Length: 522
Image 1 (cartoon, helix red, strand yellow):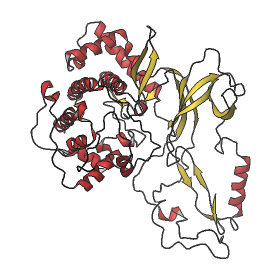
Image 2: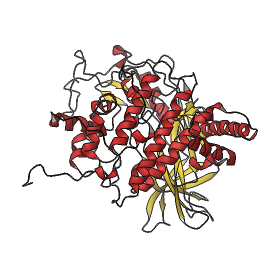
Image 3: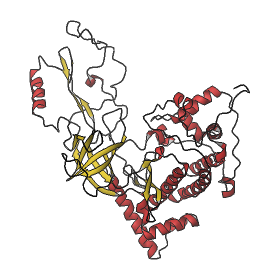
Image 4: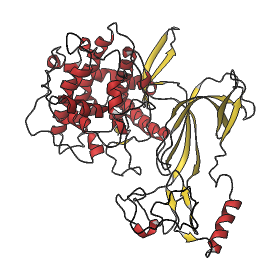
C-alpha cells in the first residue's frame, strides 16, 4: 500500500507480473478501503506471500549452530547445507533461481540426515506455467537419442552422422551404442511442481513507464498533510492516465518448480586448474553434439551452466568430467512455436544478435576456411597498432561488463578485424600459444555466419564448427599441460565495472600476461 495525503494505491507483486491499482481517496471511498482491509485480514499466509513449503530452522547439528532452510518436495524434505547460487535479481518478476547443496532429512524438527543420505543439489525456480521443465526437456532429448541408437544397431544409414569427421563420428557412435550420454548431463533424483502465480486481472493494462521522468502535471503533497521529513518531489501517481506500451509482451503466470540432482558440481567460473577447464569444455562440447543429433539447441550456455564433477572412479582414483546443465531454455531446432519467455540466455554470454536484436552484416568478401595445419599453426595473427590507447582500454574493458545491453567492445571483437588479436595480445600469456587459434576460430565463425545468411535452418552446415572446436580443445589441452599457476576465480558478487576489472588482479593468473615496463626506470 502507498498513501499520499488522502490518496491510496494498492500494489501486487508476484513472479508472473506486478500490478498497481488506480488511485482512490480512502476517506470518501470508504467502501474500497474497508474491502481492502478485510482482504488483508482474511487472507491466508500463502495469499500474503508466505511459502509453506520452505521453513527456516537453526541447525544444531552444525558446529557452532547456523540457520538453514528445509524445503519440501512432495513427501520428501531436504536441508540446505550451503548456497551454491543465490543471485539477487533487480526485479520481483522472473525466475528467482536459487541452488543449494542439500541432504535429505526425516522432518523439519529433526535435522539429522537420513541414514545413507549423500549430499545432493536442489534447484528452486519459477517457470512459465506452460513451459516444459528441465527434466521433461532432457527426457525428450534422451528419447531422440535412443531412437538414433536403435537405428544404428539395426544398421540403418544415418545421414546426420556422416557430416562429422571420422574421429568425432566414432566417438558419437560409441556413446550411442552403450547409452552413456547420460553421464554428460545431471542425474535427477526427484522433482516437484508447486503453486501457480495469479493470472493478470481482467481489464488490466500494461505499463512500461514506471521509471520515466516525472510528469509535469503532478503536484507535490499538500504541506498541511505531508510529513516534514519526507521529500515531496513530483512523481507519477496515477499510472492509468499515462498508459503506453513500448514492448508488448504476454504476462504468463509462473509455477514453482524444484528438482534435486545427484551430482554436486563446481561451476566453470570457480574451477582453478586449466586442465579441468579444458575437460569441462571438451565434455560439454560433446554434449552439445549429442543435442545436435537429437535436433535440439541449448540457448543458455554460460560459465554457470557447465560444471566440473569430481568423483572417485571404480579404480578408487579421483576422476573428473564435464556436465552440461540448465536445459530449461532448450528447444527443438525447428520448433516453430515461439518461447513464452522473452529472455533467451544469460546476459554476459548472449549472442550479439540477441542483445542487439538484429543480424550482423559482417562482410561481403569471399572467404575460405583454414586447413587443420593452418588452424593449428603456432604463428599468431599480428594485431594492428592501437592509436587511441585510452579509448581502446575503455572499449575492451566493456567486454567484461555483465549487462543485457551488448557493450560495443564485445560486438567489435566479433565484427571488426584485428580487435580480437589486439585484445589477446594484451591479455593472454603468449606461452600458451593460443592467440592464433582463437583469432582463426573467430574468422571461422564469421565465414560460417556469412555462408548461412539465408539458410539459418540448414542443420548440417553447423557440423563443421564442431570439428574446429575439437582442434581448438586439442591445442588448449597441450597448453594446459604446462607448469602454470592456478586460475584466479571470479564470481558475480564482485565489482564487474570495466575500470575495476582492468585495474584489479581479477584476470586469470594462469593465462594473463605479466606486464612489461613501459620505460627502463619503471
